[in-house]
Length: 242
Ligand code: BV8
Image 1 (cartoon, rainbow, N blue to C red):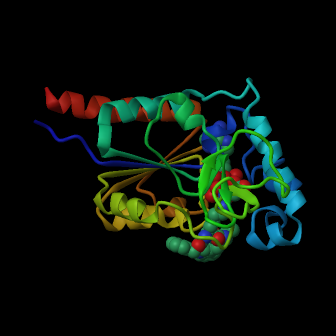
Image 2 (image 1 turned 90 degrees about the horizontal axis):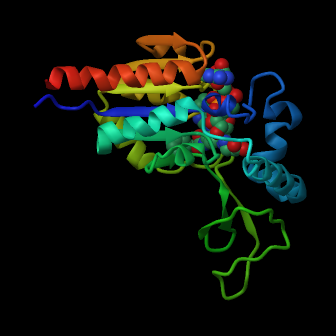
Image 3 (image 1 turned 90 degrees about the vertical axis):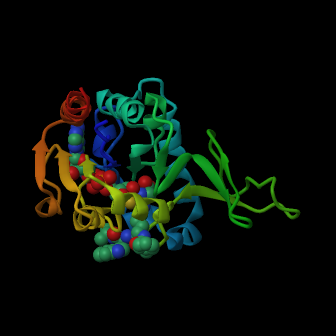
């Protein structure tokens, strides 16, 4: 029986661009309207919480807009999960829920999630689809505490790092999709995967900053190159399995 490959996929803002969600660095990207240090750092949250709450409430409201739907790239990755089962590890830097809405059931949001809040006292996280601000209080502490967006800000430790490092050390194929390779530790995963002998592939509209570390790079819109590459992987082990 031909063994299915261990595949690790890392997605960035580019995978959600064709669904209508702004990326960060592309022109008119999120960081054009807001300086990173003004909205996505713990210092910003203590200096101007109102601005930070508004920044994430606006993005949460945009995500609830019916026009925002998963695209063919998200759907193809959900299909890959069905074909590979536990042998697929899907890591995303995105805080949107389009992977889950496409049918992916095991998504590691290493930078947090928009549709979740975190208690500033206990750290308890809970699903939250509505706007909230400094007046909102938790239900988990004897003395109710403010909630914060359940987002990993610059200078904070990403989530699921143990699971991610383990998966990278076992990967046969590592695929980075729609990410500029500017933000660490995510931008360093390709090197960790390479060191473990994985084949590394970049699927992106344009070369990322760390493209030189990839064995292969296929440029094009995610909605086109991801379904094609997923089909290639699935047919590869089905053929050999025959
Ligand atoms: C940490 C949540 C310690 C917020 C985010 C080493 C060197 C230098 C600096 C550092 C370093 N290590 C750490 C740092 C500091 C910092 C960092 O990397 N700074 C950068 C700016 C230099 N990192 C941190 O602070 C991290 N924490 O290191 O803790 C630690 C380390 C290891 C282990 C334990 C502890 C925390 C970083 C997380 C910050 N939070 N997001 C929010 O969303 O509001 S980062 C945020 O920006 C996103 O999550 C994402 O990670 C990043 C954006 O990048 P992309 O997703 O790639 O998006 P971008 O717009 O840049 O690019 C889009 C790409 O898509 C482009 O390439 C484009 O061509 C392509 N594209 C566009 N359209 C399409 C497309 N592709 C295909 N199809 C299309 N249609």
